[in-house]
Image 1 (cartoon, rainbow, N blue to C red):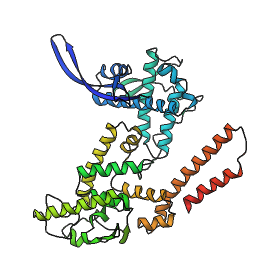
Image 2: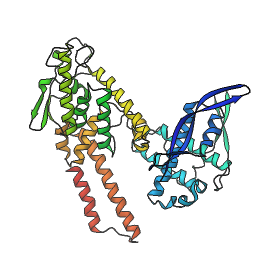
Image 3: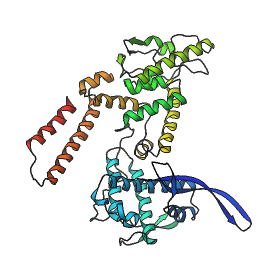
Image 4: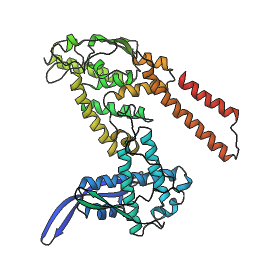
Length: 437
């Protein structure tokens, strides 16, 4: 099934004897089998509501992405056989009703309450969807009858008309998210696709920041903090069988004797750290050692203790320098997700704050997926307090329990029964036991 995409392109505008080339935004339909993209009439929404009104390219782009996310959500619901969206398989956009927008807004609101999206992002998306519905109704594209009304609000010294929210209807039951609702300040995991996303991030880092990619591996496969990574020396890495053991120690005096502000290079908990070994990390480890040998042969540096070295200065990479390199990797990573039209993962990772510490959260969830209990996870993470690990475990267990419960309720509904069999209750308890070990 084809899906909607956003594309930027150039058009030539004529005015009398003058002509100029301008960049603009359009919406197309992409065939996943051929990768062919065909223009969609929905582009007229961007043209009439934004481009013709002198709105910036950024405004056009933001509205286009909002609309394509919504339309692709509809396509996905049709694929999943959601009964509320079944009519759209034959009727297309003409059959869109308020309930479809309501369900989409509700899904975004629930993700915001779960900490995946910010409330501001959800409200922005809702405003675009409201404008889209108004345009569809005014153009006579959709048939459902709802009132087109506006209210006047003051912005500075001027009054502006804005659309009344048609989804704010008790019959629709739309779930909204308030601006004052609190969400996590920092994203702590890549979500359900953490495995493939971690591999993608690391492979991008191999090209963007080869001098720290090994450190990124240590964070995602060993849960190291940034300060623990930059404090490692070559002697701190112990090869053991087919794996590696890291001796996490405070080496500030050796590596950073002249740095006065040490807040970004302090080791919180010295320990010996095991890693989740894999071929990718072993290959990167070998590449890293080869890179160090090349730098030493070129005379860039001559201290065999250094592990993460600046190719320009020959000095150890500091915590601040590591952070800057990581953020360049993050930027390239998000760009790659955007180019792949990976809407779900891109929305999660682009609309929330995260930095090097997310590797520690992803590592924790790797351990959860392996079935470790809170005590084991706390030890593996190098936590002195088990509560740090419990925060991840409780969230994971709650999600598992909800999935079990939803499946049971759906089975009960389909079978027209009003009680839950004891076997179901045992499965529920198993899910709880699995989470709390």
